Length: 141
Length: 111
Image (spheres, rainbow over the protein chains, first blue to last red):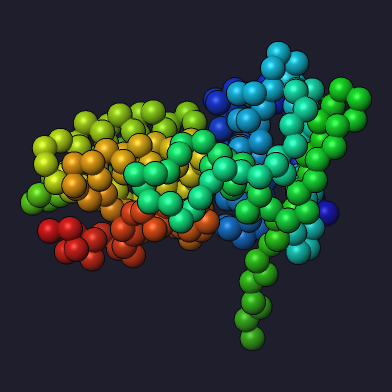
């Protein structure tokens, strides 16, 4: 099992830099392009939400990613305001453009792209964990 | 993200490369917004080399879609990579935007 660990003070630039490192790590581990993109995307959305709404205590967050045979597991721990990413997202994918709201897209993506999305608040720390399945490439011959 | 544009007949074709996220979405929106002029504007954004799209990028796209539709124009994408296409599908953006497999087919549809 390969593991990636990083600390981050979440800002737009730092989040982009981190998700690029995550993509490089997952590609080197042989993970398929779909899971590489979606793991980076979910981490981007959770950290962006933390940077925007986490308050003054979210100075440092920790990201841990484990590559398993059939899935990627990740945990994001932070000291921001408590926030459960499983709360319903206010996105109507069927709505026409004229009626679409700008908010809620990040939360919708997190909920739709992950399995085993969990959250708990331990003491002063938020812990968000999720899994994303790997697509198994067929072996030739 | 790198953006380059060219006019093909009545259609502005924008070639985008890189990540469309919180660090690039404003630049993406502003540069393409400047091309949305007149009545019935027609724009095609080639996403062949866009390898990452976050909700910040989607909000930029939504802003452009709303403006283009208000002018009774068309905004289309082409050559979208599979993971990005899945993001467009699950957020419903694929139902708001014409998405073509490749550039020539998109230009034929827009011209």
